[in-house]
Length: 516
Image (cartoon, rainbow, N blue to C red; front, side, top):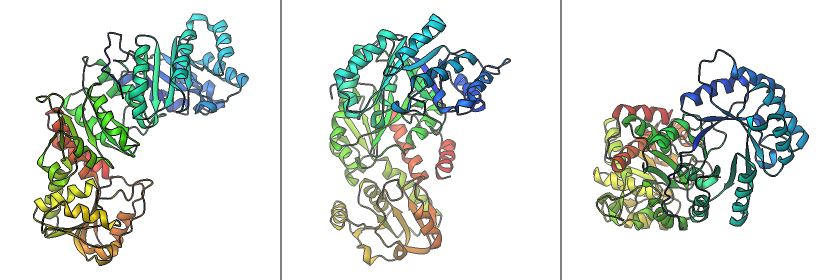
């Protein structure tokens, strides 16, 4: 990965908010929200609107309006390029003309591969009153040379040229960032989807892009493209002074992560305009070079989640005691006083110590606990349990791995317990990915581990399959979701990154919000 720190003296990009609405009423409400969030333009996805409702778009521009009208882009994404609209030319032209007759769009987004004749027809009808954005949605394997040519071609014929493709973090840093710098200051857009989705959006201003696409404000549930970042946070970041830092969480998979939501709430409360994004590192080989490259691109610090916590600890130059003890790190930050030094922390340990204190106040005896799993999260539980003076039993399907983990804690208070030898415990901690989408089923006989009236602490928050909650309730065991863990460790990390404490009242609100 050869990305260098981008330098930009170009105007900041225009912020475009893509509206997810499918009805005129929804779009009118979303238009107001985008306007209030500071959008420069909104994008209306005509392909998401039933053809019979096209004329109803006129209601978005009713007078009087209770919001400021801002320029709008009309987009008709074809099925061939990942949308819901027609591929056939006549049908596309008819839909576009109908929409343009009822709403004063400033731009129309046309597809480079199929809309050249449509572009000529619209120019004949609207002349310079209607700008044209030429876009191409390419496949992941598109060669760099073809990417460059496609971007040049789209810029030559349109008001803006736009290329979108799926890409790994490694390819984005190694090829796409240098490619983007070739076009800096021109009216171009280069966005990715998939593992690296948010990255070029964060870098849009220093890379001199003309437009950057965002979602409506909120938790990301109302978005057409998951890679889009919330418009209100993007607005603050774009308006901030040059060199404003940003933060990330890395792991695989990462789409489920609510760390961006939590950290953005913290940042908003303390008045910092930073961004926090989720980057999916599909292969472990990406991790080290990604860290090196991202440091030059303004990244201040990174949270690390499954499966890279142990690798993060290995790569660090400086390690806090909790990292040495647990053999895992969930927080990495570059030391300002030690140029180039990467400092590792394990805020999972301190978060779990706080949680164990709380569950002790809520009924756990504090004498012993059972940990399910042997990865980085398990190591943090063990370290926190030993710190609290409890005997920690560890179990899991991979006996050799569990035993290696136990051996890394030279303490008489840490023991391996085979799944077939489980006994009831007052506190059971799930430190596996079980419950997450795509995770393997649990192979441990939980019914042997549960003690009626005990507690199950699940470190997975908002599980796709809440079977652990169901199992706990059926066994008369109190279930605690992963909200506390997420928020507490995030608050510790936040302080490491920013030097600011996370607001306590907000932390309590977020725990309730995450655990539902």
